[in-house]
Image (cartoon, rainbow, N blue to C red):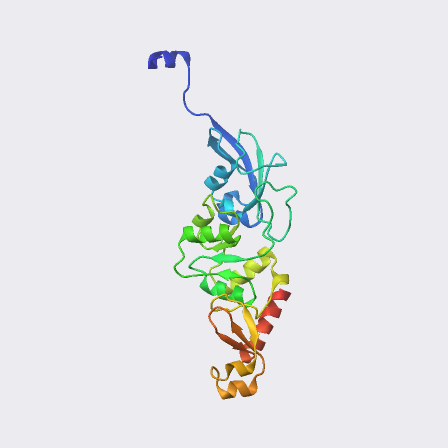
Length: 262
């Protein structure tokens, strides 16, 4: 059919624009323009995109999403939008098992372990002080972080939204704050980590496990004053760093108590 015939018959070959109404909950709103936050908004699209692609086109990393309801029913990331749907999107529920209704993951990560990106070294140290298994290296590549996360079932912590938009990512969190102290409080509150604190069980330096050692094993490693005034010592199984109950010990205990009570 030539152009003239198309115009005479009124045939329109332009793609049909459909819309679905989206509503994002809790901290997922941090990724949205102010006009869309905490309210229903119409999202236009062509064809029949997956709800996962639509969510990422809107600007929300799928790695932070744990539950999607379409017209009140849970769906997976592969659900194809038809137009006219009411879509509700919820963040990760690491601290709450909602597996009976979730189609996006088999279950929350019961053992909370982390791998953090190259910008979060100070946060990694603080998490280790609290006893959380936290991998960090200042030369990690994004692909390496994702591979470690999948292989070892670790939550990705990052300040880079791009990592969490990678299709392979299953568990991740984008830090809203750029201050390490605020980042720690943010993670504790978000994942409800208070009951998981195990201070002085990991090395803040390398993430290795600490084991208690006898004073007699350290005669050639510590000063005579330290050996005279302190009786309990721990040694890292990874880097061999030695810890004891110095002035920093009581300071850390007060810090841990404050975090647990916030």
